[in-house]
Image (spheres, rainbow, N blue to C red):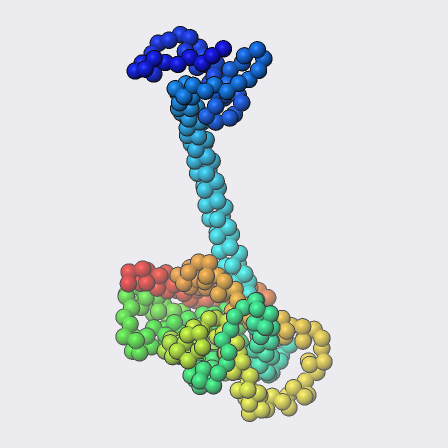
Length: 403
């Protein structure tokens, strides 16, 4: 059968039934064969190519339209599936971030509470009278662990240079004094009162910020600080296990802790300028603080004559005592890691609020585990002081948001 040729000048949409029938057959065969731009028809059982340029043009345009329609449908379906995948991915990411925040917050609370309780257990239950040596051993574990992780490439730390050491040394002296006074106060004061008295640090820090950095606080912050002072005074008056030496060490610890935070702000920028990378991450600060504390700690051990005590005490021959001491060292390092992890997953506001709320279960655990004698008035003052700490954290959060 020959191919039909349209007359010259005839329109393409001419109502020719024979042409339309042949066109339908050609399109059907071309669609089934899957070959582009070709039309076929059957003749004596043989398949031959139709060579009419007009019919070929019409069929090609028709097939292109059909393929375009199919592609549009696929694109619409693909768009819907991609939107569904995007929603699924966003949902899984949000759930993962939420789980990471909860996990990091839980790890931070456990490590910080455990550290204080274990130190109290070593100093009081074992009656270990060498707080500087305990601090020195804990810092040594931190230095060894961070150095190993840095050597393996797990974390990055800044190399210790003489310029960096000279800049950081004043901060380190305050840091060592803060740790030692905390050890001494914890030996004589119960955990609940230590957490309440630590609120005095916030008062000293706020006053220092006002005079050193010209920072003004709103009325809510000052109201919370006033409640902290009242709770500390009432807690000390009603404390059945009051110890003047322990309270003196704790007040000194509050001044040193506030001085550490205030000095750190000034030294931080200077320290970054003398580093090779121009930055100083938290791991580098952990290594810097704990590493520089080792020679100063050895000197203080000799000055306070703890060497003689360590040579006479039978505690160093107990494997269980070394186990608890080592655990306290790893817990001290865990606080640094988990606090950085939690701070990265949430933010400074959530971190400060959780830190204040964390004192409540810590105080209850300290009273129950060490069987601290207490009264209704002392318990009320402790609870009042803990609530004042939460109120202070919320006031600071609101102050940051307004500024």
